[in-house]
Length: 323
Image (cartoon, rainbow, N blue to C red; front, top):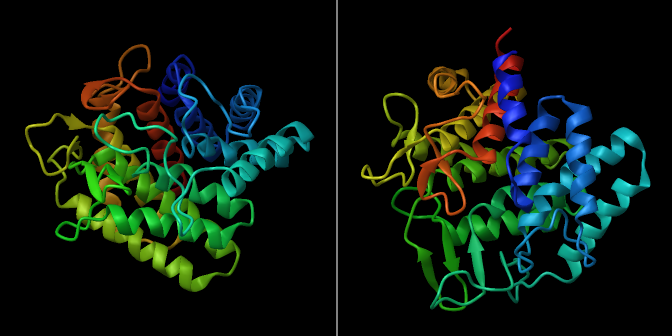
């Protein structure tokens, strides 16, 4: 069995929360595995909450995580012409536009409840840069998409490093986790790339240029902390945390995609090649990636559907660049 097929098989055996389901389906969509991503989209709709949130399991307070399923569900409609998927995507959009809790100027909160004692429920999380804005843009809510991405980016950005913090309490005006989480920054980069693709399609050249600058700025900031084997410490500026390959594979996917689509200089390719070479050595006989952060808090080394999906994304874009 080919390595990527082993990784895919292991991915499909992983338990997944709503955003992880969406990340998995998106990776398979980008890899061209239509049959499988459509099946994942089917289950995201099957688990849709009555208010429109897709792929809901366990925590019913989540607002933006379920949107990670939005693009795969809409792509499933495009592929099958089945109203089941169209209705699922449109209900997700309606929830986000009409019912999700947000700031007075309209930026959506991560959740309706706080998981961190002592902090309010009015929180921004960095992974929302991936889950939410690209789906909004795909569904022709482009202005809303850029407002959301800009809102998270601006409030989470660390002026000293150019990297994004994990989370922020809007009500209290303080950072919840004073941590520059590698995977969160990788997700923000991938979100910028997907949103950029939609901007280019819609001939929004200035927005595309701004997103390109933001994505490259994050890339450059992350690469300053890259380990010699291509990975990153789980907390980028803390070398006492373990080395993580999930964030590295997101960086590689971003690089390969950017080179393929023509908005990133090929000088970065050697960085991505190093990551791909390293992480291939961390796949066990069952197809699971090791040397990565694991759920549920991603603060310890383990295995995860996120790492499996990141490998599939990286591999898919690499194959488009490497002929």
